[in-house]
Image (cartoon, rainbow, N blue to C red; front, top):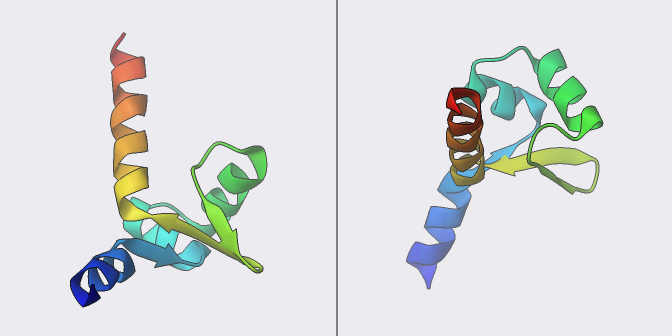
Length: 68
């Protein structure tokens, strides 16, 4: 059970700074995309969060749509 929790913790990005760093975007761009509903995310209280795996899948989907 501990291994599953470790994987979840490693997959989580907590805060716009962490998400921005992972995506290579400015923090303000992350806030804008979240506000517009353009970026997959969830909140824990006031903190915007995302999963690396979800963002990676989302990016792949965006690439496929752009190529079509």
